[in-house]
Length: 194
Length: 194
DNA sequence: CGCGGCATTGAGGTGCATCAAAGACAGTGG
DNA sequence: CCACTGTCTTTGATGCACCTCAATGCCGCG
Image (cartoon, rainbow over all chains, first blue to last red; front, top):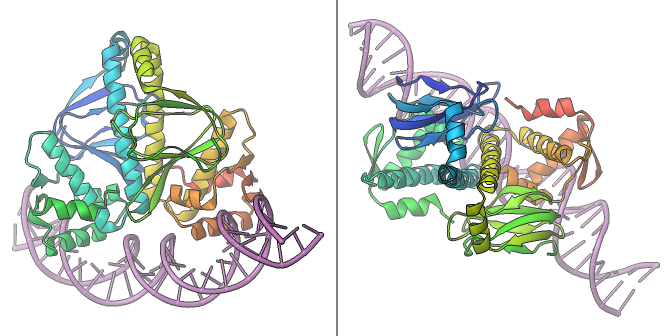
């Protein structure tokens, strides 16, 4: 899929399961007047499809060119029913997504704009490390607007927060969408984890 | 357990699974300086314990006198491993909690104070109906402060929002913690679902 | 070169937080 | 029975963090 294309939309009939093999995807929900909240960003290695309902609860859009592996609903349902180990694996994934969702609730409900951006960068860096990449230089496949919609802020506030982090020497912006973390410790402190 | 007591605290070693048979419980996360976010409210019939990690990611406190059923970690782990049907059931629960968490993210990131309170009341009413209770009169076992920490607001804003809903004739407050919904349709409209 | 989308920066406005105070209860003890 | 205390709720006045509006710069692309 090309960047900008949707895998599926909120309300579409659901069922299929997707595995991302290449690229980045955003999951979002939208209010009637256009206000949007990005539930999460997914990258290669992640799975989509804990629908359990007849229709998708959110929209999935490609941020970059994306390569996905689609498992049609029915064979997958039968296959997973026959393999308890797979279901256990899915339960594990769902559980860790739930934990991430709870962190995000704390972020959206109680953190300041800088804490939100710092937390976001810390999480991205952690995911980069989990993919055997450097945690110092993080790429941002999404736009400032996407980040804003993920952190419950506006584009302007996100941009200003980047500038503040940059001016205080915690990060460096090689490119608009590549962050170099200069002090992981200070970034973590700013993120206010607990 | 008496009201106010904790089932477990953020950071405690986890593992056990709980089923609530009577009463209401809050799940919350706290930042170092005391800022708190209530992840969710649970009531009789709900389960707690998708830990999957060595320590609890949040604190569980009794809002009312509570009766719980505790399943110790180890026998439960063995039992669920032996019963794929149970694991599938747990996956279903985790999935619907995930969907609820995503709704809450939209609420926290993008909704106004009135929309938040209206959405909250709509959800409570829905849960009351699911428990074969009237959806018109909803009881609030939690304080205004708890609601504030759940909706990402302050006590004062929650109180003002209640007043506004009351003055506009959408709800009625029999008691401080019992809401009568006068117009479910208008409440749903105010909640801004999609 | 000119266009359109994205990012940054500045100036000003606003929704909710903060601060302050008073009312409503329940519990407690005299 | 009633003063006393602490907790919760409500309401008002004020302030601020972030939003809104506006302008400019940057870059990729036809």
